[in-house]
Image 1: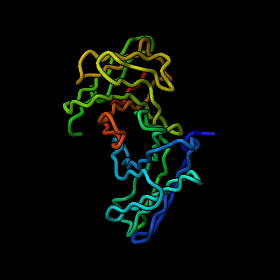
Image 2: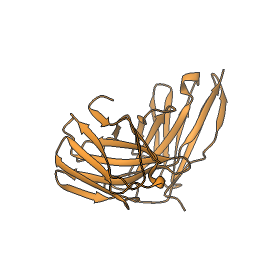
Image 3: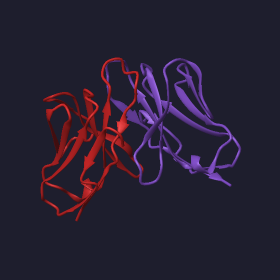
Image 4: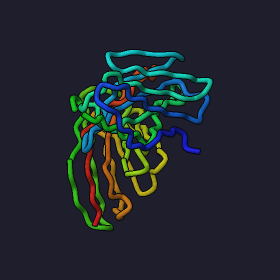
Length: 112
Length: 114
């Protein structure tokens, strides 16, 4: 079992709809969770991080964490063509461990 | 990317030759990392550093070595390049301590071994 798993996609969503991206992780001791966006040919950029169970909102983005079920999700509301990218989930297993483990990413395409 | 620079951006090299990639930061961050990114595998950690001359291996460290003689520079060396090391290499930096923040990535180096 991979440490961090994501559906590779592609996930196609109509413009204006909600895009839902999911990630599961295997280490129950994981503490910090990050979502990165990566445009084709570019480097990953951090868009959200979450540490506590529940929802965290930032603009059109909402991160959701459920530690009991070991999943973290990213919702993108009012999807725009500019949201078309690969989204990487990353997990830090515990405080003091400064390494992130990444999923393979989900490719999202927003259809105009 | 602000505060972090990778060089070169592109390189083609021959099998068996040594190659060194450079990562330079101006953020004075303690932690620096080298990842490679390949289709179907995502980002995989090669080596990382938690201070000057303090380095450790990641999950795919075979065939690679690193050095960090100054806070701002983290070098990745492919000792004898092989075709399996053709990849995009990303350097990343992180603030130390609480683990609150994620990484900031450099722009990447696309390496082709022929």
